[in-house]
Image (cartoon, rainbow, N blue to C red; front, side, top):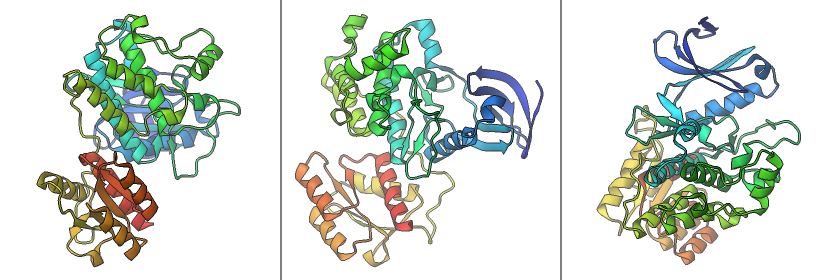
Length: 408
């Protein structure tokens, strides 16, 4: 194959891995260091479109921000008109749609593990303000190098990065996404938030279990209309009889038409799936931590300062919080006067600290099922809650959000 010259050097193309309407993906050797990568190259007529560079930048930025074990690492964004490409981590894998084509459907135990992994990616993405908008089996890759099942979520080309100026990336009157997995609000052109991704994720899980998307037709209009007005067939109607009723109830809730009727977050949905398995006497699916701190970050003396008042918290949870602080490149300080962020365990203390220094983010460790605590925290201006029981990845992400607030 012909080598591909870029500003950073010449990529040696080894073989073509995939081809689609937008571009081709090749296994290639990265110049200078000889690393084998997946090189995604936009087709010339796509690269000539005004939004091509922005779409590619979105994908590169989304992957770089996530740094998650169930996505892929991005190594280089190549912008050398007319050549637009991304060099990414090479995964020895198979997309889920191809596996469905050969196997028909997947066993429930495997789908339960995939659900946990997929939702861990969405937890991390939504915490960074990233909404995927195009979840489908073709964008889930089974990684053969890991213990099965181990998925990678790919293709963030349609992702929305909240908080950034993002031009319209679709033609007029064209809705981004894939019809079989689009949420009702996407279809109506109302935009997509985290709950929209949860709907699409539920459509994907439904297809992995049954071998068919919730709504299928040769006519795309019929599919879109069904998402708006019809309920998908029960799993039993599709011949799937081994899925626990409680787990099915979680899936049905995620497929609710109104966004407010779904789960409020990927974390809530993942925990609901775990609880459903526990009620059946099954173990929740094992998963890789949803948070992976950058390896280059070190808590040096000049790192962002965080003060702790963790009275009443279990020793293991105190250690978890301290580890998360170090993991995101911050440092613990002994006095409030030095702190940019404060983490506490008392609602009353949190309220007092907010009044004392309104601009300083206060994080409260608390059970989020206590409505009074939630209401008082919001009214008092507490920056965020660290839900009990603590999850290391969730603690890390929320500390990062607080530190970003301080640095603004």
